Image (cartoon, rainbow, N blue to C red):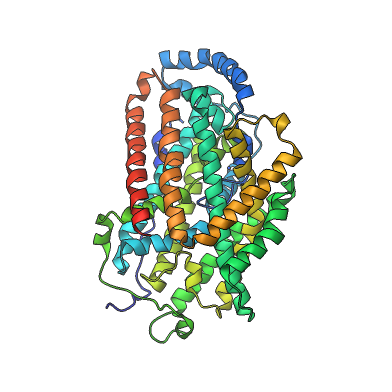
Length: 489
């Protein structure tokens, strides 16, 4: 058994963003979830198909000419939008959309690769690569909107791939939001059970989940106008930043160092390290981390919104926003995951905050901040889950009465709570949803839209091939990642 690593170990952090490939040619909450309002902004009903076809027809002249001329037509020299958001504002909001509580599940993904500090090297490389690809496909989505005139993710799909397959986007949106609500419920149940324990109240996880769902989450989900909850999304970013700082303080302070760390005696499961290091990344288990990372960077549904709201929205300016935002997120993920893994090694809990002592007030405050942000984020995300299901079964707006919405809310909230009561492995939920949904939203859909929008443009020949490679890679990761997630149960 190896000793715990010294704190002098340096983890290389690189903020390389692949979207720079598109510089000349070319907003929202928790990681592993789509952003709060994205579904509402992106849904397309069957009654809108004729309008979509008309708008698409009106745009045909524009990008038919661009196909016949050159790739310069893709660039918007002066920016054609009416947005007012500055680049710093956009960067802040996009980072807020990407970074969230999901970062605290990633150390368990690293532990699936290995139990030696050297496992961090390939793990951080995967964090970097997945972030870079996510940034590139985020930029691709905006480029499709610029090319076709689409103003939402769903329109971008319909304009580039056709309305016959719009159900794919509706289904993916609904399922991704439902998976997000499920992870929220699981984290909240674990967190509040631990918080109750710190004040001497012993209560089961399922009891906490039931009380929390019936008294707080369900009433919030029944609210029809959720605009008043939007400001609480900032708590998520601040809570994650504070908790990341607390993790760093505890690591560098040696509070969990074996054998004599301040809080080691309070732990039921002690930090543990072994001999499986960087070579562990050669095993198929590495795809568990890759699948988890597929949900860690999801903000793509809001790419059209960020592009539209950017002041002087040239693609060059948008790529500055994209590269800076994803670069910050990559660096934050690498830092927090590295310090948490170096603290607990192979015994990182599926939600690493659960690995810390219940008597650690510094981390206790962080857990409370994360829990509060999830409580207020839950109904905003749930709106996407509910509306996504209604879109999928093609219920028009005029038939979405309060009675129907309330019945669906009761049923869906209860179903999500039941599943959360039966499933306790957060790593499994995050990795399986990442494998099946995250890879589609990051690797496959944006690249298919780009190929459809640029069809027939000879100047995009090599980039179309790159998109084909990325889409194929996404398919392979989805199949193998799902298999490994199921085998890890």
